[in-house]
Image 1 (cartoon, helix red, strand yellow):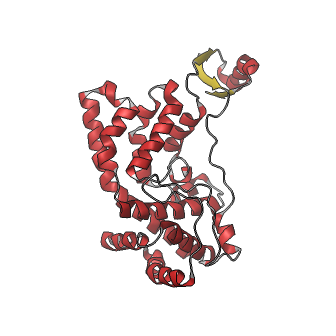
Image 2 (cartoon, one colour):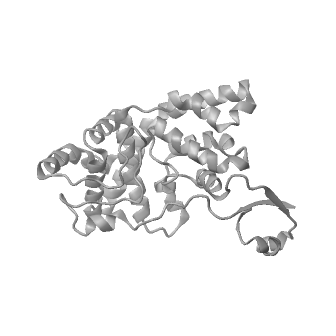
Image 3 (cartoon, helix red, strand yellow):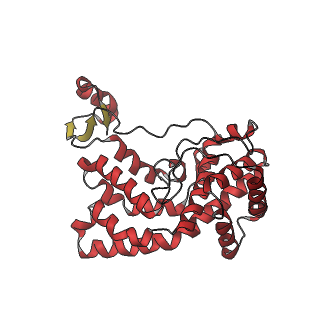
Length: 298
């Protein structure tokens, strides 16, 4: 016996890859051009537009002076001290985050492979350093809540409210995180994967830890999948986090699965029992659910 959930289809469209951002950058887009990203959102307190306003030449000169030291550190990102990573974080939040992201991505479009990979490592370190203290504090709060009242700990809205103060980023942290996430995500989208293990180059452990911390509460009630996804977005906005489910390349398979499950099961759809043979699972399921002609999640 197995159980499946079926509905009229995906309750939300999955993020659409509009092509490599590097393709735009390498096409000669410079100071007076605009780069368009699939989805750029930081919540109500931060940069939200999917388009970046063109900068003038003076701004470009300022950005270059500000960010040139950052890209110079890319080649030694692995061995950098935490203090120097903090300096990089401060440099990323001194200008509009969209302009900073565009400048770094344009630089990556023409940089050799090694410095490009180094910048990804450096941005991952910025994300980890920014998020580490916040996720550790949230872990303590979730563990305490589970010990005191396991039933309430399985309600995402409740546990999210408990953790918001610990996970709320200040403006500078939020801006730096947005830039770092945008760079790593764009690099992942433009990469050519021959083997699955290459995905690990772009995964961010602190993001994984955050998603898996709330996995039980997000998935405890399958009938609340859509509602919990909307609550998660509100939670991200309140904390100043970039949209994590729009950047699945930054997550491990386990964390990706959380968001796929939230997206694929509409609210109010009951489970259906099916009888299957071990060696013919998909064939048997399709025969029993075929009249419904709907998306099915096993």
